[in-house]
Length: 53
Figure (cartoon, rainbow, N blue to C red):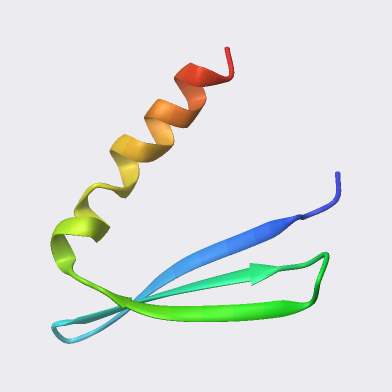
């Protein structure tokens, strides 16, 4: 299986940073995100799983 994208969220105190790497294009983008968006990530993953069944 080939990785297309990877994503990670890092926390530095009260600051959250999302890092997304596109392995096909060899690019990485980062964005500061609020905590309420980070808290929604598990729900978004569940929705993706349900959509692919």
